[in-house]
Image (tube, rainbow, N blue to C red):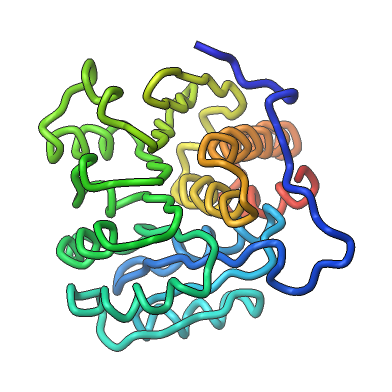
Length: 264
């Protein structure tokens, strides 16, 4: 196992002559009737990673709520409260303009057919988070960072008919970022340990920030592994700084987004 340190971090390089979009465009698919904030947190975190452009694809009512939350996020709105399987064709067409995609934040448990169809047919580097992890089999995933907590990890293993002793050999070209007191970033051959962070990060939304950072770095053309390392390290570091500033566990996921802008 390899411990992640500050020396493990590699930041994307920016061409001083670059134009809007040259430093990455990210698509985030999520949101549902009951969950609006998750995709907004993920989108803002992606922007804080340094990526140039973030578009949220969301159900119509969720989209208008996100517009009210932030003028920095572009929102593509779709009719209905949730994503249905037939919507996958529209999203696959939309993804062509983007460098990386995040799916799952706030998407809910009614979108299994949509999630599976999209994940099996996408051509883009992916980050898969939240409820999307409960709908899929690892064998159907390619070129992705998966970001489960313990419960989501167990659901993924069950769907995949795998267990904790044999799943690593089935990762292939995917990366698993298992969230916990010590984050584990697992490849098919190696495990990296991230020890930044604290128990204040059990609050809702911190995982959405982590996923947003992952796709933000991925959209700037870092590798899957480097994107996961950067995201875990900075997400936890922001939490550690906020713990000292707030003198306790009163900080929120939205505070992480604000703190990250001082770190990356």
